[in-house]
Image (cartoon, rainbow, N blue to C red; front, side):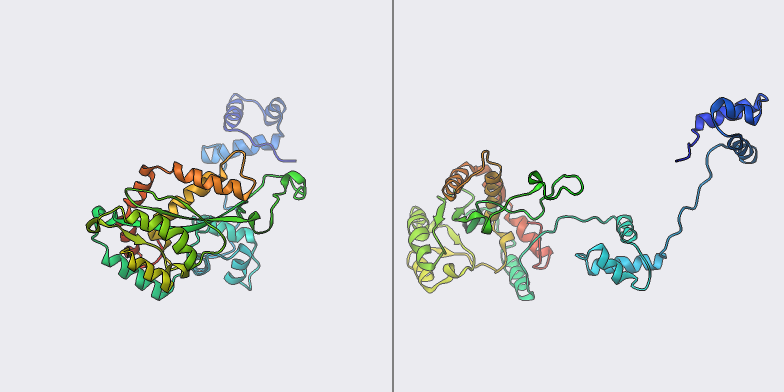
Amino acid sequence: MARRRLSEAIRWQIIGMHATGASFKAIGRQLGYHYTVISRLVRKHRQTGAVKDRPQSGRPRVTSEREDRAFLRIIRREPFSTSTVLKRAWLPNRHLSTRTVRNRLKAAGMAARRVIKRPRLTDDHKRRRLAWCLARQRWNLRTWRRIHWSDESRFLLHVTDGRLRVWRHRNTAYTPRNIRQTVPFGGGSVMVWGCISHDCKLDIVTVRGNLTGDQYMRHVLEPVVVTHFDNHPLATRPVYMDDNARPHRSRAVVDYLQNNAVTTLPWPAMSPDLNPLEHVWDILGRRIQALQPPVQTLRELEAALHREWLQVTREQIRRLTGGMRRRVDAVIRARGGFTRY
């Protein structure tokens, strides 16, 4: 049974009652405490003039400050390790609990957080990204607004989020209401192509099957891109951006764009953070997931994507395309490495 602790008000009441001449046993009977508790409190007051508990040392630390600094170096070297792995790597010959490891992590201001995923960048990728941005560092909005940003994206019918958690009691993992049902490969997917610029948004195109160079020309470039570019005089003709996917760089596609006077923007590999259209795909994905009732078939998903694409406003697009100088500066500061975009 836990021992009752005396509040500060009760302690001063005991001191006052003793000062009026009451005995330890009389005070104890009146307040419901053993007389030895009363005597120890009065003795403490005589010695220190206070009634609060003295500071206690607590349980001694099992690691030194030097060992704690070594632990922080391990964390910086292996940030994805679990507390069990860190315990073995830190002091393998010392008996430590994982609670000690978590306490040191907490004391250092660290917590387990969501991992940001980015494409793998080699040194060559970083050099090319940096060179691309340095060459366009002084571009103003008038230059950036000529760029037409294009990309494809695939949307799953049933999105599977590995970070999903459930509030449940112990030993109820297999209760039906606590189980998230899944289907293989997300139940199928729909791939779409889109294109935006600072001043316009082209029609979204559904890509059937795997995208090939011939498909890219017949269903995307010829009916959408070239038709749109032909509406501009040569002096103010836009610049077309697509990434380095194989269908985009096939010889037939390159010749087709040249024959139709479509100027393309050279693109550094592994650079989705430089394409503002990636954020439009994110907007569409979140809107699709928020639909009530949710889409149930691939046909419904395709219709919803086309519908939500129309709902993306010019103001939303201009906020993205108008920030290209910030994106370029971020890559330069990172020396071609990862950015927050």
